[in-house]
Length: 241
Image (cartoon, rainbow, N blue to C red; front, side):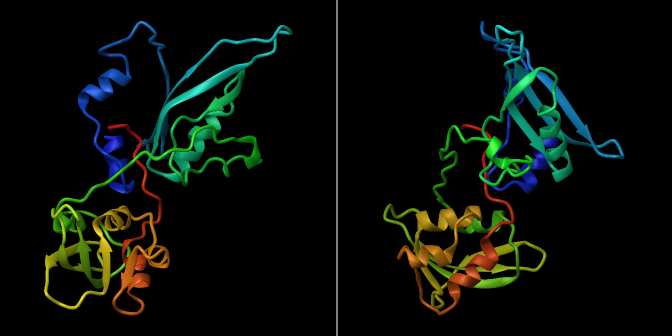
């Protein structure tokens, strides 16, 4: 239930099956190297679960009997900033733990700036984790939410002939949007690949126009696209699929 709430506010998150949860908690398919995880839950003042972390810890000590243990986060879910901050503080304050490995995190995660000294954290892996290939422009644009009201006509090119066409996107103040094929003059011309990055809410149409990958057919249309499509948090998929 917590993960479903997260999916509603995290662009890019996908569903997790019942089998995923059983495997991640050791209920089924336990490998020989299975290490039983610890779990910590964060509840709000009224008792509602707002955060959950799964982690493991090793048992390493120096010759002088000083702890060299590492806590490794399997996954951390939080639907409120308070829960996210509290869980990281908890992980960084466990007795005998000298280092915390965060696992895969979003590009705009609270770490490392949550730390008193952000330089105490180091990025060990930097990689793409989510790719999108739009096949149905109308359904895709109507499925997401929008940051402001407005309207744009998009001329979408698709070399594979699957999703090309001209579409009018109409976003409402309540965050919903409608999309339909149109013959009106286009405001922006772009490839379906560029539309996919804009659809996720992370890329800037103004930046893509500067790169020559989006063409403004009407002055100011790229800035208007950013106002509609950019999300307050960057898209992130916590899961490999």
